[in-house]
Length: 381
Image 1 (cartoon, helix red, strand yellow):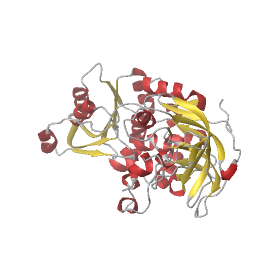
Image 2 (tube, rainbow, N blue to C red; image 1 turned 90 degrees about the vertical axis):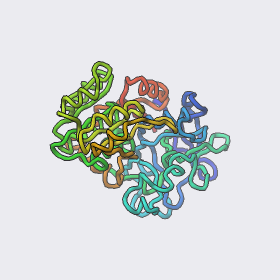
Image 3 (cartoon, helix red, strand yellow; image 1 turned 45 degrees about the vertical axis):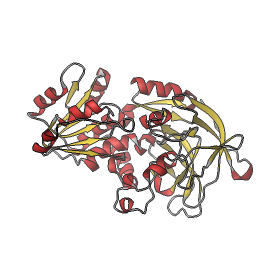
């Protein structure tokens, strides 16, 4: 296991161990670094574990233009070690899940839609705070790009703000909870908050990765009567049945559109596209029934275009909408998902596999190849 340290260095910095994305497409490098103390409404969190998400990998590979070298990681879970002077509702020792950054005061945030914050890209992908400053520097004092999703949790300690450090019960398994901050919140929230899947309805998850399977579990919680999981990996489809899918479709073996229309008698009420593949989105629109709604959460490279028949959309009253972070209010939704897990109704632990931090590149490879649905990196403090 990778070890880390909490030694305080000169000028109030704390020594940390971090996985650094050094250059486009290059493996993560384990580095010793240091992090400053929290200020204002910030908290310093001792990271117990952090999920590895598809977004971390596409940023490493520069699908999104986050400046490198950078400490990525955005599904952290840990314990509050220190608080800034403006923190009101968190205290040292609290268990928290770290989620996306939002300003908290723009029109979207004020309306309960922080995932569409006016400053979302800068806060989550800017490589620093909104003023361009960094909290982490390497062991020679050179700044490392950080504040990734307002946390940069591929490190033994992370700086977050009070509004994206979500308090969770102490009796919940903290090392498991990090993915609730992004990937699992995204799939579940898309179903419950965005599409508002209703009891007795039909739902199709186009893609059975961690996000798609989280959507399957959420559709069962929401009471959908027909839940269809689509993928090309048989083991994922088998797991989908365990998690609540009533039907599975291997789109490598059969025509997805025909299969879903046959299962539902014309098309699904709701569908979620989580693969990030333009052709799957185009086909997915044709799986919808009349007045059907399609949510899009899969993230392809910037500039990717998809094609569809406008009249197919128009004449059937179909809807397509993009969804960020499950359109959730994390302070409400993440504790709800924890409670559902503790009740045995949302068994997302079946998606995960644990790795020590120094095996991050193996975890990334296993995630990309489909061997592991949701890697979680653990820290040994």
